[in-house]
Image 1 (tube, rainbow, N blue to C red):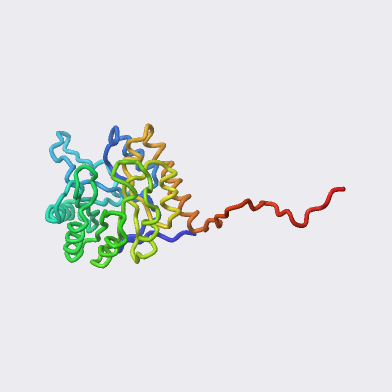
Image 2: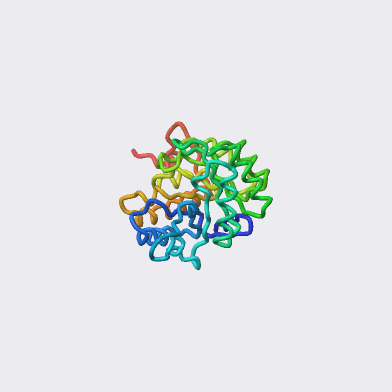
Length: 259
């Protein structure tokens, strides 16, 4: 039996977190969320339109009796902007959770490590449960843990690239050294990517484009759910040792000799 995923004071049975962007429609988004089995949905606060003539925002399409909303600071390029966005999110949504993103490069969307650590320290001291998006760098992840982040979220590959886990060795080292949950964020493109990431021993995955941009987002959400669970159970079970030569499933010793 697996144990719950614990982040700060929060407990989750599902280890898959999902996003809200790039879906063909809000109805498909809702169906994909349900198919994913996720309990956490992340929302970019700077992309919520408050001037919808219907009076609805994206938040109204998320059932908060079933999902925990994880607001994020996507679109921020400085620690100052990220801190302000987090404070607005707490005021608007009544949550101390925040996925911290401080982008350093608009083309690669790689995070600015220095600004991310600076913002994280301020937000932790302000009472937030901080989950920072960061490069797959063990040193940066340790620094974020040291300032009090409740988890670290190293990228598997650039945001929206679908390249899968580009550097499994770095992810494995980050997990080996971390005392907080490690959630792989960005780059997972299909179910096999999800399984590979979970087999490294990470505590969870956050994905958006891999589901939303699929030909069938609902079907892909279901596939990601199964792959996340399969990868987790494979890690817990422990894979067989890799060997250079064949090793018969049925041993050759002790066989009856034919005349």
